[in-house]
Amino acid sequence: MRPEKEFWEWCGWTYHPNWKVCWQSPKKYNSEKPPPMTLDNLFKHAVPKLYESGYYYELIQWNEGQHKAIIKKVTHGWAVIASDVVDKDPAQAFYIAILEVIP
Image (tube, rainbow, N blue to C red; front, side, top):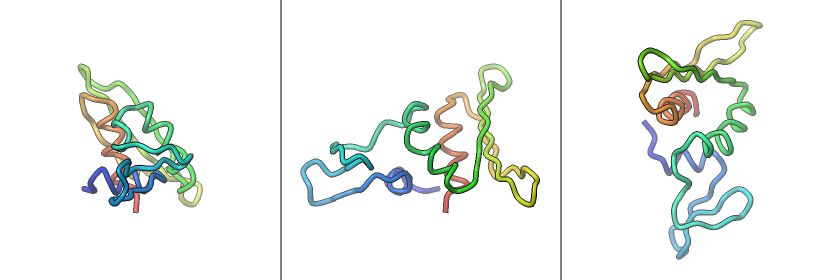
């Protein structure tokens, strides 16, 4: 599994190890740390990259407080499940599902 640093770089953030404030967002906002792993931040930064890569997603509430993240890709007219993750935390389920499909 990829570390968060590589994940945020895939989302367009830039890491500058020699800067005092070492993370820079795609909109040139500087921060000491990458964004927290929340659904809001995943939708803001990762979902556009998923769409660019030809993927789409489903997030559903699953059994007894579990949440399921499904990422699909349309191939030859068929939707193929590329990732399917269940977790109590919807953000964690979505994050892991995304990790399974990004290059």
